[in-house]
Amino acid sequence: MITLKNDYLTVQINPLGAELTSVKDNESGLEYMWQADKAYWGRHAPILFPIVGRLQDNQYRLNGQTYHLTQHGFARDRTFTVIDQTTTQASFELAADDQTKALYPQDFILTLSYELVDHQLKVSATVTNPTTAPMVFSFGAHPGFNVPFGGAPADFTDYHVTVSPKKTYQRVPLVGPYSDTTHSVPLDLTQPLALQHDLFDHDAQVLTLDSHETTVMLSTPADDHGIALTVAAPYLGIWSPYPKQAPFVCLEPWWGLADDVQATGDLTSKVAIQTLAGQDTFKAAYAITYF
Image (cartoon, rainbow, N blue to C red; front, side, top):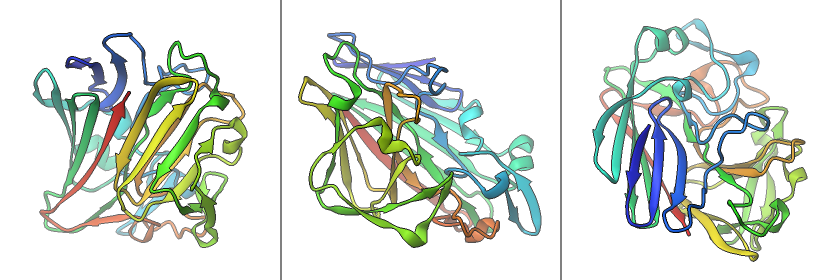
Protein backbone atom coordinates (compact mmCIF):
# COMPACT_ATOMS: atom_id res chain seq x y z
CA MET A 1 0.00 0.00 0.00
CA ILE A 2 1.28 3.46 -0.93
CA THR A 3 0.72 6.21 1.66
CA LEU A 4 0.62 9.96 0.99
CA LYS A 5 0.43 12.41 3.87
CA ASN A 6 0.43 16.12 4.56
CA ASP A 7 -0.65 18.27 7.52
CA TYR A 8 -4.34 17.63 6.88
CA LEU A 9 -4.94 14.26 5.21
CA THR A 10 -3.52 10.74 4.97
CA VAL A 11 -4.20 8.89 1.73
CA GLN A 12 -3.69 5.23 0.84
CA ILE A 13 -3.52 3.85 -2.70
CA ASN A 14 -3.29 0.19 -3.63
CA PRO A 15 -1.03 -0.64 -6.60
CA LEU A 16 -3.63 -3.31 -7.42
CA GLY A 17 -5.78 -1.28 -9.76
CA ALA A 18 -4.00 1.95 -8.71
CA GLU A 19 -7.08 2.21 -6.47
CA LEU A 20 -7.61 4.94 -3.90
CA THR A 21 -8.61 3.04 -0.76
CA SER A 22 -8.53 5.53 2.11
CA VAL A 23 -8.58 9.25 2.83
CA LYS A 24 -8.50 10.16 6.51
CA ASP A 25 -8.63 13.49 8.27
CA ASN A 26 -5.45 13.67 10.37
CA GLU A 27 -7.02 15.61 13.23
CA SER A 28 -10.23 13.62 13.75
CA GLY A 29 -9.34 10.29 12.12
CA LEU A 30 -12.51 10.53 10.03
CA GLU A 31 -12.53 8.15 7.04
CA TYR A 32 -14.08 9.62 3.90
CA MET A 33 -13.75 6.68 1.50
CA TRP A 34 -16.01 3.65 1.34
CA GLN A 35 -14.20 0.68 2.91
CA ALA A 36 -15.27 -2.06 0.48
CA ASP A 37 -17.68 -4.01 2.67
CA LYS A 38 -18.48 -6.96 0.39
CA ALA A 39 -21.99 -7.18 1.80
CA TYR A 40 -22.69 -4.08 -0.30
CA TRP A 41 -19.84 -3.51 -2.78
CA GLY A 42 -16.33 -4.86 -2.40
CA ARG A 43 -14.39 -1.98 -3.96
CA HIS A 44 -13.30 1.52 -2.97
CA ALA A 45 -12.59 3.62 -6.07
CA PRO A 46 -11.80 1.45 -9.10
CA ILE A 47 -10.30 2.80 -12.31
CA LEU A 48 -12.43 2.02 -15.38
CA PHE A 49 -10.44 1.09 -18.51
CA PRO A 50 -10.63 0.28 -21.41
CA ILE A 51 -14.43 0.46 -21.11
CA VAL A 52 -16.95 2.17 -18.87
CA GLY A 53 -20.02 0.16 -17.92
CA ARG A 54 -21.18 -3.04 -19.55
CA LEU A 55 -20.96 -4.34 -23.10
CA GLN A 56 -23.85 -6.12 -24.78
CA ASP A 57 -23.29 -9.82 -23.95
CA ASN A 58 -19.95 -8.79 -22.37
CA GLN A 59 -18.29 -8.80 -25.78
CA TYR A 60 -17.28 -6.52 -28.63
CA ARG A 61 -15.78 -6.68 -32.11
CA LEU A 62 -12.58 -4.99 -33.26
CA ASN A 63 -10.83 -5.50 -36.59
CA GLY A 64 -13.06 -8.46 -37.38
CA GLN A 65 -12.34 -10.31 -34.13
CA THR A 66 -14.68 -10.82 -31.16
CA TYR A 67 -13.36 -10.26 -27.64
CA HIS A 68 -14.88 -10.96 -24.21
CA LEU A 69 -14.62 -8.14 -21.66
CA THR A 70 -16.59 -7.75 -18.45
CA GLN A 71 -18.04 -4.60 -16.90
CA HIS A 72 -15.67 -1.62 -16.54
CA GLY A 73 -12.71 -3.47 -18.09
CA PHE A 74 -9.60 -5.01 -16.57
CA ALA A 75 -7.46 -2.15 -15.21
CA ARG A 76 -9.09 -2.33 -11.78
CA ASP A 77 -7.84 -5.92 -11.38
CA ARG A 78 -4.28 -5.45 -12.66
CA THR A 79 -1.25 -4.51 -10.56
CA PHE A 80 0.26 -1.20 -11.63
CA THR A 81 3.96 -0.37 -11.35
CA VAL A 82 4.84 2.50 -9.00
CA ILE A 83 6.94 4.79 -11.19
CA ASP A 84 7.27 7.82 -8.90
CA GLN A 85 6.63 8.51 -5.22
CA THR A 86 7.17 11.30 -2.69
CA THR A 87 5.44 11.99 0.63
CA THR A 88 2.56 13.75 -1.15
CA GLN A 89 2.58 12.34 -4.69
CA ALA A 90 2.62 8.94 -6.41
CA SER A 91 2.32 7.75 -10.00
CA PHE A 92 1.34 4.31 -11.27
CA GLU A 93 1.68 2.73 -14.70
CA LEU A 94 0.03 -0.16 -16.53
CA ALA A 95 1.18 -1.20 -20.00
CA ALA A 96 -0.32 -3.65 -22.45
CA ASP A 97 0.91 -7.24 -22.23
CA ASP A 98 -0.16 -10.67 -23.47
CA GLN A 99 -2.88 -10.93 -20.81
CA THR A 100 -4.46 -7.58 -21.64
CA LYS A 101 -4.22 -8.23 -25.38
CA ALA A 102 -6.30 -11.39 -24.99
CA LEU A 103 -9.10 -9.09 -23.81
CA TYR A 104 -8.25 -5.89 -25.66
CA PRO A 105 -5.76 -6.09 -28.54
CA GLN A 106 -4.54 -2.49 -28.41
CA ASP A 107 -1.12 -1.37 -27.22
CA PHE A 108 -1.38 1.27 -24.51
CA ILE A 109 0.34 2.86 -21.52
CA LEU A 110 -2.07 3.93 -18.76
CA THR A 111 -0.70 6.22 -16.05
CA LEU A 112 -2.47 7.36 -12.87
CA SER A 113 -1.04 10.12 -10.68
CA TYR A 114 -2.25 11.21 -7.25
CA GLU A 115 -1.10 14.46 -5.63
CA LEU A 116 -2.08 15.69 -2.18
CA VAL A 117 -2.27 19.50 -1.91
CA ASP A 118 -3.66 20.88 1.37
CA HIS A 119 -7.21 19.46 1.71
CA GLN A 120 -7.38 18.34 -1.90
CA LEU A 121 -6.40 15.17 -3.75
CA LYS A 122 -5.61 15.82 -7.40
CA VAL A 123 -5.94 12.81 -9.71
CA SER A 124 -4.68 12.78 -13.28
CA ALA A 125 -4.62 10.04 -15.88
CA THR A 126 -2.97 9.64 -19.25
CA VAL A 127 -3.50 7.02 -21.92
CA THR A 128 -0.66 6.90 -24.43
CA ASN A 129 -0.92 5.18 -27.80
CA PRO A 130 2.63 3.99 -28.58
CA THR A 131 1.73 2.70 -32.06
CA THR A 132 1.10 4.49 -35.35
CA ALA A 133 -2.50 3.22 -35.68
CA PRO A 134 -5.51 4.78 -33.92
CA MET A 135 -6.81 3.16 -30.73
CA VAL A 136 -10.28 3.27 -29.18
CA PHE A 137 -11.12 3.12 -25.48
CA SER A 138 -13.10 4.61 -22.62
CA PHE A 139 -11.86 5.77 -19.24
CA GLY A 140 -13.52 6.53 -15.93
CA ALA A 141 -13.19 6.72 -12.17
CA HIS A 142 -15.54 5.22 -9.57
CA PRO A 143 -14.73 6.69 -6.12
CA GLY A 144 -17.08 5.69 -3.31
CA PHE A 145 -17.70 7.89 -0.26
CA ASN A 146 -19.10 6.96 3.13
CA VAL A 147 -22.64 8.22 3.74
CA PRO A 148 -22.69 9.21 6.49
CA PHE A 149 -19.03 10.08 6.98
CA GLY A 150 -17.59 8.31 10.00
CA GLY A 151 -19.10 9.57 13.23
CA ALA A 152 -21.46 12.03 11.56
CA PRO A 153 -24.80 12.45 13.38
CA ALA A 154 -26.71 11.89 10.15
CA ASP A 155 -28.34 9.26 7.95
CA PHE A 156 -28.02 8.54 4.20
CA THR A 157 -31.19 10.52 3.55
CA ASP A 158 -29.80 13.59 5.33
CA TYR A 159 -27.20 14.05 2.58
CA HIS A 160 -27.48 16.05 -0.61
CA VAL A 161 -25.57 16.14 -3.88
CA THR A 162 -25.16 19.72 -5.09
CA VAL A 163 -24.06 20.17 -8.70
CA SER A 164 -22.54 23.45 -9.86
CA PRO A 165 -23.26 25.17 -12.14
CA LYS A 166 -26.83 24.85 -10.88
CA LYS A 167 -29.00 24.19 -13.93
CA THR A 168 -31.05 21.53 -15.70
CA TYR A 169 -28.84 18.71 -16.97
CA GLN A 170 -29.61 15.99 -19.48
CA ARG A 171 -29.77 12.56 -17.84
CA VAL A 172 -28.99 9.40 -19.81
CA PRO A 173 -31.45 6.69 -18.71
CA LEU A 174 -30.24 3.14 -18.16
CA VAL A 175 -32.26 0.18 -19.43
CA GLY A 176 -30.87 -2.62 -17.34
CA PRO A 177 -27.11 -1.94 -17.51
CA TYR A 178 -27.27 -0.25 -20.93
CA SER A 179 -27.42 3.42 -21.95
CA ASP A 180 -30.49 4.75 -23.74
CA THR A 181 -28.90 7.82 -25.28
CA THR A 182 -31.78 8.50 -27.68
CA HIS A 183 -34.17 9.12 -24.78
CA SER A 184 -32.23 11.52 -22.55
CA VAL A 185 -34.43 13.33 -20.05
CA PRO A 186 -33.99 16.65 -18.22
CA LEU A 187 -32.96 16.60 -14.57
CA ASP A 188 -33.43 19.84 -12.64
CA LEU A 189 -30.36 20.39 -10.48
CA THR A 190 -30.92 24.04 -9.71
CA GLN A 191 -31.48 22.79 -6.16
CA PRO A 192 -29.50 20.09 -4.29
CA LEU A 193 -30.43 16.49 -5.07
CA ALA A 194 -31.62 14.79 -1.88
CA LEU A 195 -30.20 11.29 -1.49
CA GLN A 196 -32.78 8.52 -1.30
CA HIS A 197 -31.97 4.86 -1.83
CA ASP A 198 -34.74 4.49 -4.42
CA LEU A 199 -33.09 7.22 -6.48
CA PHE A 200 -30.98 4.33 -7.78
CA ASP A 201 -33.74 1.80 -8.43
CA HIS A 202 -32.85 1.96 -12.14
CA ASP A 203 -29.09 1.99 -11.48
CA ALA A 204 -26.93 5.12 -11.71
CA GLN A 205 -28.04 8.66 -12.37
CA VAL A 206 -25.94 9.56 -15.43
CA LEU A 207 -25.52 13.26 -16.16
CA THR A 208 -24.26 14.76 -19.41
CA LEU A 209 -21.66 17.39 -18.52
CA ASP A 210 -20.39 18.13 -22.06
CA SER A 211 -16.84 18.37 -20.66
CA HIS A 212 -17.61 21.67 -18.91
CA GLU A 213 -16.00 22.16 -15.51
CA THR A 214 -18.46 20.93 -12.91
CA THR A 215 -18.28 20.64 -9.12
CA VAL A 216 -20.30 17.96 -7.34
CA MET A 217 -20.53 18.36 -3.57
CA LEU A 218 -21.66 15.67 -1.13
CA SER A 219 -22.72 17.17 2.20
CA THR A 220 -25.36 17.39 4.91
CA PRO A 221 -26.64 20.26 7.09
CA ALA A 222 -26.21 17.90 10.05
CA ASP A 223 -22.39 17.84 9.83
CA ASP A 224 -19.53 20.11 8.78
CA HIS A 225 -17.72 17.39 6.84
CA GLY A 226 -18.18 16.68 3.15
CA ILE A 227 -16.41 16.33 -0.17
CA ALA A 228 -16.43 18.24 -3.45
CA LEU A 229 -15.35 16.66 -6.72
CA THR A 230 -14.40 18.98 -9.58
CA VAL A 231 -14.04 17.67 -13.12
CA ALA A 232 -14.48 18.54 -16.79
CA ALA A 233 -15.67 15.20 -18.19
CA PRO A 234 -18.33 14.28 -20.74
CA TYR A 235 -20.41 12.40 -18.14
CA LEU A 236 -20.86 11.92 -14.42
CA GLY A 237 -22.42 8.89 -12.77
CA ILE A 238 -24.01 9.04 -9.30
CA TRP A 239 -24.54 5.55 -7.90
CA SER A 240 -25.34 3.51 -4.84
CA PRO A 241 -26.43 -0.15 -5.03
CA TYR A 242 -30.18 -0.70 -4.81
CA PRO A 243 -32.09 -2.23 -3.04
CA LYS A 244 -29.24 -2.90 -0.60
CA GLN A 245 -29.63 0.37 1.40
CA ALA A 246 -25.86 0.77 1.20
CA PRO A 247 -24.19 3.46 3.38
CA PHE A 248 -22.15 5.02 0.57
CA VAL A 249 -22.48 6.81 -2.74
CA CYS A 250 -20.15 6.98 -5.74
CA LEU A 251 -19.47 10.14 -7.75
CA GLU A 252 -18.00 8.93 -11.03
CA PRO A 253 -16.39 11.03 -13.77
CA TRP A 254 -16.66 9.17 -17.07
CA TRP A 255 -15.03 9.60 -20.45
CA GLY A 256 -17.32 6.92 -21.88
CA LEU A 257 -20.65 5.15 -21.36
CA ALA A 258 -22.05 1.66 -21.10
CA ASP A 259 -23.13 0.18 -24.43
CA ASP A 260 -26.22 1.76 -25.90
CA VAL A 261 -29.38 -0.34 -26.03
CA GLN A 262 -28.96 -0.24 -29.82
CA ALA A 263 -25.23 -1.04 -29.82
CA THR A 264 -23.87 -2.87 -32.85
CA GLY A 265 -21.03 -4.51 -30.92
CA ASP A 266 -18.33 -2.74 -32.95
CA LEU A 267 -15.99 -1.01 -30.48
CA THR A 268 -15.10 1.76 -32.94
CA SER A 269 -18.75 2.86 -33.07
CA LYS A 270 -19.48 2.35 -29.35
CA VAL A 271 -21.35 5.25 -27.77
CA ALA A 272 -19.04 7.94 -26.29
CA ILE A 273 -15.89 6.04 -27.33
CA GLN A 274 -12.57 7.89 -27.28
CA THR A 275 -10.34 7.67 -30.37
CA LEU A 276 -6.63 8.34 -29.91
CA ALA A 277 -4.29 8.83 -32.85
CA GLY A 278 -1.00 6.99 -33.08
CA GLN A 279 1.77 8.41 -30.86
CA ASP A 280 -0.79 10.64 -29.12
CA THR A 281 -1.78 10.94 -25.44
CA PHE A 282 -5.22 11.32 -23.88
CA LYS A 283 -5.43 13.25 -20.60
CA ALA A 284 -8.10 13.24 -17.90
CA ALA A 285 -8.11 14.84 -14.47
CA TYR A 286 -10.30 15.54 -11.48
CA ALA A 287 -9.82 16.82 -7.94
CA ILE A 288 -11.52 15.88 -4.68
CA THR A 289 -11.59 18.40 -1.84
CA TYR A 290 -12.22 16.93 1.62
CA PHE A 291 -13.64 19.17 4.33
